[in-house]
Length: 343
Image (cartoon, rainbow, N blue to C red):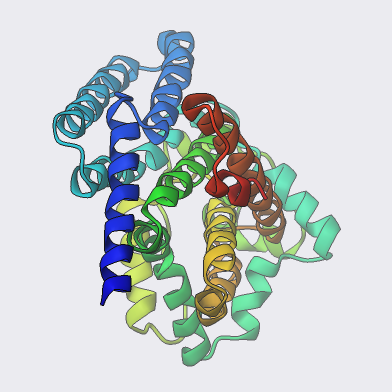
């Protein structure tokens, strides 16, 4: 009984210390990353403004986002708690659904580069895995399992933050920092690298051309043809329909290389592996299914997956190193958490 009371007092002290540290900073590091992303993309908008009719609207959206971020920051500043911290993270999570499709509003003004990546795929794989993978395994069960893995992606993002929020509140900020930082770097790449992926590019050039191994450039075709054609499958199960519905609502001809689905999943599982090996092994089959699904549903080339794995590991280790360095500068001391996180 005394041991439990001592542990509760210790946990309360840790939480209070963390709360005071965050309350002394108007913006948490995750919000600083968001601010940097707003500034960088805002500069790109100003440069592209003469050729972007909706540039002023996008700039106004950024002003509104900064206001929203400030409101949640002030709310926490006035009343620091786990709940108000969670509100700040939830707000930034919600913004990801805006930042992702916005990348297309930028890169539609550049010539599409899918022909280069499709040719590279042909050289590396001697074929197009996005074509033969689903044809080789058309079975309903396999289709549903892989679509389930793809659909659960967003739950994994929330899940890893929630896991640390409950089990190790101090490190939840680190997890959010690395995750959001990874997202922002991916989105900056997508903003300037117009690669749509097989599900958009192959229907655009025609399936006969794909079968013949011809991958012609299409310029700015997607600027006027952003529609996603539904993938033809023999059996349309529940998770196939859920994935298709979400893609029809929010998918754009953008963000193929590198695969952020694979990259972010790599970051998530690296954090799970660090804190809970048991949970890591339980969830690993889902991560594998998610990775395979990116090619199975023709969202990505196989080389996108390889690049996603590589960048995911890079962002995990680099992001942790950066967070530890910044945290030491802010607190003036190296904690055990910093030492563990700088792996």
